[in-house]
Length: 120
Image 1 (tube, rainbow, N blue to C red):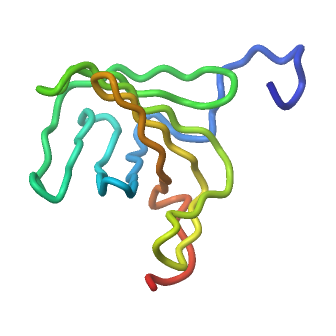
Image 2 (cartoon, one colour; image 1 turned 45 degrees about the vertical axis):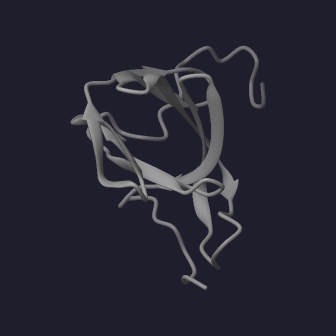
C-alpha cells in the first residue's frame, strides 16, 4: 500500500455527499455512485439501473456495493491518473467494477475533481 504504513485512517479524497461519475469501454458501461446509490448503465440500458449501495472508505480508496439485477456489484475507486483509451480526457480516479462474475476497469471523476481534456 502506498503512503505511510503507520497511517490507518480511511481515505478521504471524496466527501460523503459527493457523487462520482464513471465510464468504461470494451464493453461500454458507466454510471454514478454516491449518496443516492449506485447507478449502472450500458448502451442497451442508457437510463441505467439504480440500487441502494453501501459506502466503504479504506486506506487506499473507496467502494460502493449493491445488488444489481445481474448480480452483486462492487465499484472500487482509487486515486490515480486514468485514460479511457477512446478520448483525450484524463480522469483523476481509476475505477474497477466487479459485477456478477465479471471485472471491468474504467475511469471516474466528480464535479470537484473533474476530468480534463476533450473528447476525441
